[in-house]
Length: 305
Image (cartoon, rainbow, N blue to C red):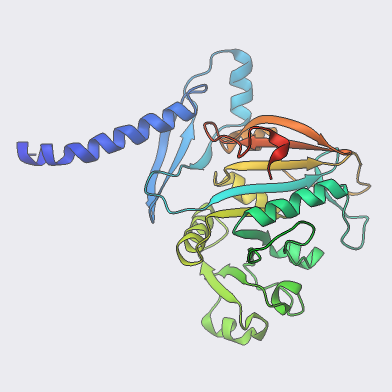
């Protein structure tokens, strides 16, 4: 390498050193080594593992919660902020198989919280399983709301969204993400998607979610996305390290035939999140998790959303 080319590369080297310093700072309590660094659009994706354990106990805990693809938003990243909301029973289950129809098990105050959150975001995302089970409208109804309804986003790899679903029959905006393995002919044959936006993504993998987030930000002008359900989609976002904050609503009930959510403290920590507190909301308990260094939108946890 010539001297001139060396100096030309110094700005890039300096930029990379800054990114490395930020990554190590975020997880300095555990230590880290970078296993993967690949660019997807304007987002760099890093996979991290621990290289330092201070005590035998921390070594055991970290081993259970180690190695997860961790997507960090660099300065040039074009991705929306992601807030995940999920409701659980007292044993961490997300649904009850003994209940034939969709039903609400959290209190009215918790339902109001969900609608306040919908009112504060640009888009609300669910999986096709939630559409099949609940047929939600995903609109703001229980609280005052003067702006446009949030964009409804459905991750539906297999075209399972029924034609009679509320999100397809009303006049509000809906975005569907489907697997790119489906052919154009299959898309055109699905008349139920007429008038709604359909975008293909590679898969439900972290790369596919990144493609969807980039599309939402750059094409649909989504700055803040709420992931509302179900458990599979929530876990996919957490496992991809794409969640900035989490709101967990726990109701004081036990399901008879519980459907495990798969979401626990270990997964949340693996996703780069830390618990910053909890509070009571009538009979329910609300936990708040956030990325280190990312303050809660309000000084009082219960004031947001």
